[in-house]
Length: 79
View 1 (cartoon, rainbow, N blue to C red):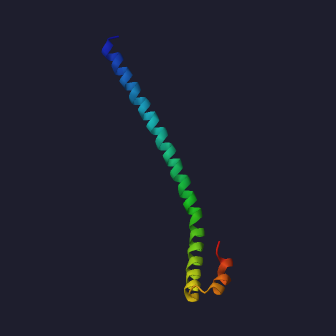
View 2: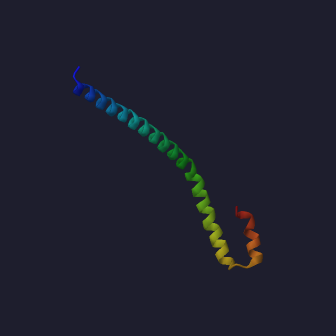
View 3: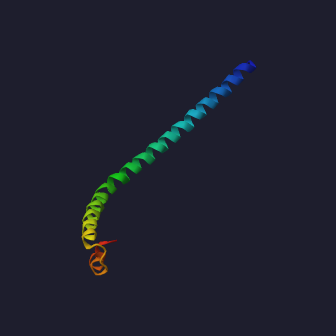
């Protein structure tokens, strides 16, 4: 076996190892993306509910003009 072919084999092994590492990294990224997508899908309706509640609370607070007694009335609606 000539020495230059041994060097080529080493380079090929390095390339193959790099491809294997890249494949594993891409698979992990894909799994993370899927998990994040599912979490966002579950959070969507909850965020919509919070947004609706916030809008109504803003309207109530605006109409109260920061009267302390009136603010106490809406305290139970605030988490």
